[in-house]
Image 1 (cartoon, rainbow over the protein chains, first blue to last red):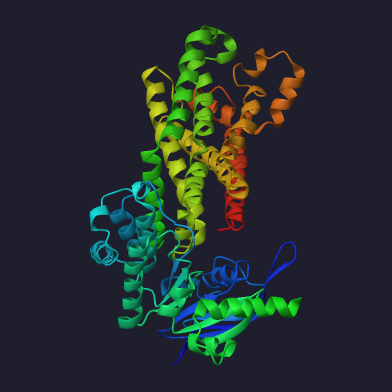
Image 2 (cartoon, rainbow over the protein chains, first blue to last red):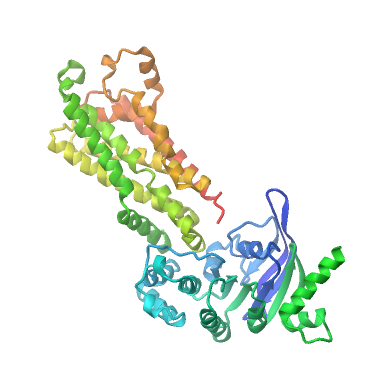
Length: 252
Length: 253
């Protein structure tokens, strides 16, 4: 499997001396649904911000689809889709307009953008909302639209930073159906951060555990569970909590 | 220019057209100045110091200046609205060059300033204002208006981007406002008694844009003011754009 995302010794220190990333090495293969897990403040969002060109790294290298974002910015932007923690919607525009405008920004013709908007409206079950302004949508529908916008240009890599926060169970289910369909049929590589570990366990093929700016584990979910408790069949959440607790015990 | 950049420029103009409070406020303020000053003290235009052009041609430049002052916060407010909603981050992640995210709303501001200046000139013409050099006068006034507008809205957008607070977009207007009174705004140099005010007015850039406009409209000021004004405001426009673009690099998305 070729690496869609390659990260080599990536470091980032924020003003004030907080070391957010302490030399991250990671490879994520094409078509993987990869979960990046860790406690709050571990460095997950910083890592995603650097990979999506929102924040600059201090040192190290990373490649997105084999491209260096520092020299091939525009190509990388077309290669990735990002749905971050907060909704990024223009409240004064309608669902249909926002989706079409996003398509046009990524170089689609008017006809292509309209067609793609319709596909995503169906995929994310936003049919009855298409003419409503983003400001009047329910929280769940705002979240769906936010995620749909990240997919308009059919990115090869999708960064999902806690994407299902604020969604009700039904919306979460339809969201994951859409994502797994893209991951399965279109081989979209997905890098996910989430605090809902049952989602990671259910949908992710591989994972990495980042704590305090360092990668503690990288491999499959099953491998992680076996590493924490080789003899017991624990859930990912139980294994994760056990691992974090063991670290605290060691520190003490 | 790529499609994404063009779309963002159109979006900036559309946003301003949908929420035109800022340019309309500037236009209203300008019209108010024009009507009130001309009606209230227009009679002094018969003094020799005003020449044959009368008070209307003398006071008109202040309406052009106050137009951009009233509307210069528009770009900053558009940027602020996008940042508050988070939509700026989505645009930031598009393939559009990042500088266009800042320049697009500025262009909308400048376009609106250009249009409203045109309307003001038309109103002035109806009231009988002279255009000393015909179409060249109109062109010159419009060009000076654009440079003045670029200067104000660039600084306004830059300050807003650095502070992240929409209230600060009006700082530039507040900072420039006193300069209006430290110049030959209401009376020609010959009728101002205070020596200190005359001295200060030479160092005040507003003086040069006022007098340049007076050269173009009534022909009451020397041509040198026009060239100095173009020089000053081309320079301030360049600095202002550089400041706005530099501020864009400091945004934390």
